[in-house]
Image (cartoon, rainbow, N blue to C red; front, side, top):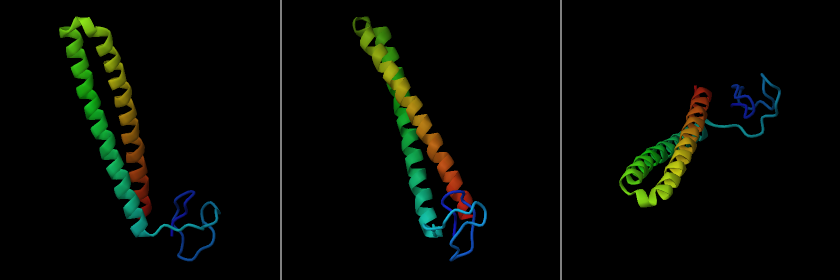
Length: 108
């Protein structure tokens, strides 16, 4: 049984965490941890896909801005949006990678 507050492993049936003293009301089984690990991995992959798509959009916006000068302002706006989406996607990937690593530590 793992503490939901600090992640420390405790004996089955414990009411309080041996490390931080928090009440153990919602124990996570190994099966539940494995499901959470898989969900975090899936979300991490989605973040990577968003990052790749934002890079494609950025390159496309730059190419179009160079070759179609009449709509340059529109393509620059598209490039800025692509950069923002790319940063957001990398943030999501990092967040879910850390979450998955923490869950794997709890599983061991």
